[in-house]
Length: 314
Ligand code: TXA
Ligand code: MG
Image 1: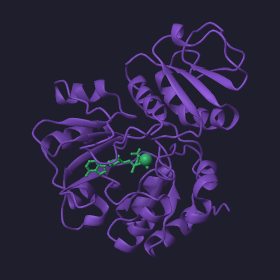
Image 2 (image 1 turned 90 degrees about the vertical axis):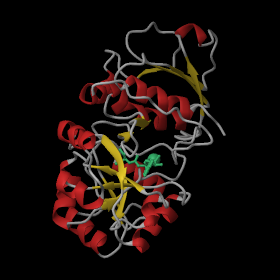
Image 3 (image 1 turned 180 degrees about the horizontal axis):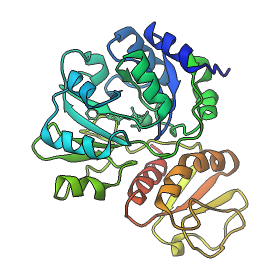
Image 4 (image 1 turned 60 degrees about the vertical axis):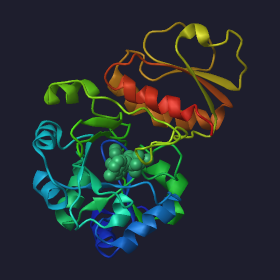
């Protein structure tokens, strides 16, 4: 059952220890007061999320980052350049954030989201809001309020509808708690942009089934159907059944009647914005999706990462 609520009601619910689905520019998050362990525990329970997978804490501005974490100069330059926006920084945590939020790690992932509704809720509630993506663990992240209602509607205290998410993939996560910065998850902020500000190449930790970055499991983003990731159009079989769809990108020839395109004009931002919604829709109608890899440029990297993980079945 969908439990939509107003911003005012969401603030009341959050302050009193409830869990509320909230819009951000990347994907919808399932939020709770990060300093309230009982509220945070409800997030893990609603998502069926393992306790080893820490949460991102959302704050309204850089001053608030300093209240919960040790801000170093690299983090400050990145946040000054890209906040509010789809970037999460991992920093040494301060004691105000309970261990439950960070799964016992001495670091905390912090983000200043750009969605005006989320910023309004952060500012007016005066809370630090812990929020993972608002999907059951292992499934595709929601980019519309309806997606949350479908999958978690009866498990949350409220859902704030802030319209479709403009970025469409989760934030880029960069670990700045060590001397060498590392990207833990490719996402809505292009790697190239981060490297410009940090004046050097930043290694990207690839996803694995035995993650040393928690939560970076290979099998994630399950769209409920089989996904086959293809390097090029030649890898897509010539004969495909009507139960199969092709998901492409940019200018491409028509090779199948059930053919869809993340961005016919080859726009990486548009592709990211469309990705999860298309995977969900196609997952409902087809038994198998042949997805074409995007060039490893800009948000193409994040889209490929999600497609790759959607294609892993266990
Ligand atoms: O765009 C986003 O980041 C969305 C919106 C709601 O803000 N949130 C999101 O949260 O994607 P979630 O929980 O689905 O993914 C957060 C990732 C997880 O893979 C988790 O393991 C990692 O961040 N993470 C959180 N805290 C961490 C930490 N202290 N060290 C390393 N990784 C961390
Ligand atoms: Mg998630």
